[in-house]
Length: 492
Ligand SMILES: NC(=O)c1ccc[n+]([C@@H]2O[C@H](COP(=O)([O-])OP(=O)(O)OC[C@H]3O[C@@H](n4cnc5c(N)ncnc54)[C@H](OP(=O)(O)O)[C@@H]3O)[C@@H](O)[C@H]2O)c1
Image 1: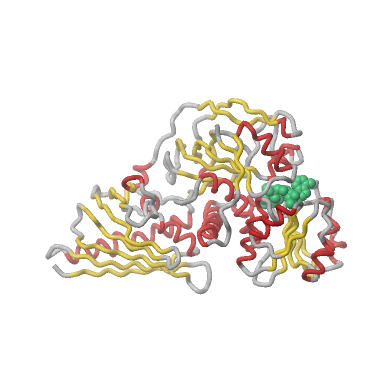
Image 2 (image 1 turned 120 degrees about the horizontal axis):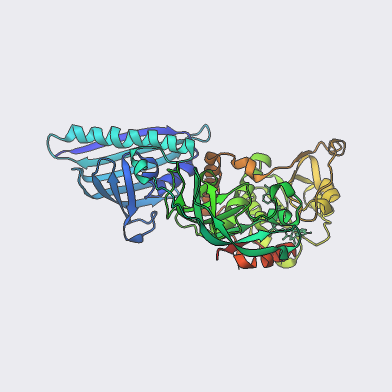
């Protein structure tokens, strides 16, 4: 028996973090590779743990058990071996190596393997590995990444689960009148079976965002008609899937952000296109604390702020949910990060997250300090709104960019072009949901957030948890300016 060797490479049209997220999950193949009908990791081990064994049932009925031999997040390399199979591949060892393509957001995938085969079957087995496994794998993976969902295949039809036809009674927060936190009351609501394209999720962790306060107060009434349930994001377990959903199964862990409020609930239906998988090693709590805020930081830093080494960046509420992430991420890119906070304790937290200069005060007076630190900010990330209007203008450098993403102190009055022209300022009023308008975009941005967490560019967020029934207390805390980091509600 001679040693066979198969080598195949391809360029995949997705950033390396996204491709690596798929590859480093040793249990992901049944999501994207059409030859794999089912995959499970034995003994409940984590799917990124060296030594774990995956058990494949192939679409043609064969079985293969493979062990993960090495996994490097630094070098993007995964090596594995067959430990047992109904196909005669012996001493099979394969290595996948990813490299970023220099011209941008694409990835070079290199697959190499060696194995022995019974005499007379060399060619057949070489062809099977080269074409049936590797080349088919490239085609499936590209489709999967482009669609942001599983490839429909004979294998995935095996996975389609028809939703249970019963409604589920479950607790949810209902708002009957706009107003203070006490308007949010826990009630029991009926959650129907998921409709076409939807999944029903048992929510374990619900992210609280300042936006939820604006909705509760009725500042954006069209967004939350009454009676209604606030909340834009949550994490949990899929409990059943509607017709035409092929990319998720009951038991899958997902997190979502969704432009339709309703996440302050124990069970909820959402379109599968708003969901993304939670990677192994990230808890539901962390996912719910991080998805919307992390994606907000991602678009602020990359798309709007164009943050790079030396950018003079002013971040308000620097110890808050979005603030901590923006500060740490921008500092890791070499930006000069200046934060405003209301207390010395928050100043310490902001420094821990990469703020080099922290301005402490509750009265929105910061422009002089910013001017004396760096002669004005290139970019201001402003979640404060009305009370800081004139100070933001004064803190900006010539040709600066004012990004108004929120209004914790009250709605920002009109900003006139004649005012901006005095310093050639630009002004943006972004909303996170526009930056994840497709599932492919959501997956790509989420992947950058998980990658930043893995590499330490951002830290696991500080999280304060409340029971869903205490949503009112969570809002009181957020509005009192006494919270730091993220707030998460536990499903009940
Ligand atoms: N447009 C988008 O896509 C998007 C997405 C996510 C978040 N946001 C916005 O980003 C900002 C931060 O959101 P977050 O959820 O992470 O909240 P957060 O920063 O954790 O909490 C809000 C913070 O704002 C500061 N603040 C200043 N004046 C305040 C006032 N009058 N009332 C209450 N808080 C005040 C407080 O920090 P100090 O006490 O330290 O000043 C407070 O801790 C909000 O404006 C939110 O609307 C926008």
